[in-house]
Image 1 (spheres, helix red, strand yellow):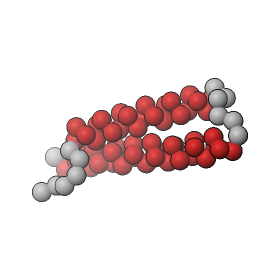
Image 2 (cartoon, rainbow, N blue to C red):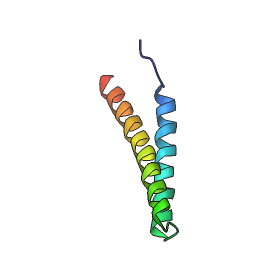
Image 3 (cartoon, helix red, strand yellow):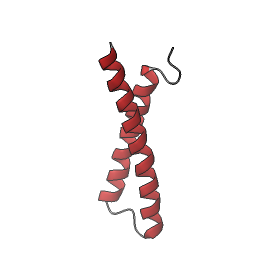
Image 4 (cartoon, rainbow, N blue to C red):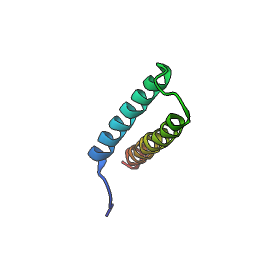
Length: 67
């Protein structure tokens, strides 16, 4: 028995994480992030969204190979 989120929740998490990374990249590329505080916020947000996307993508890929 598997505990934790199912495939649907992982797909939602993956989509929202990729959207969050896209928004973060757009904010950085447009020059809206200035100063050291924004660098810290960008790093934390990037780690959160990137880690969440990587974890959900890994779980979806592993479950797809188990079938």
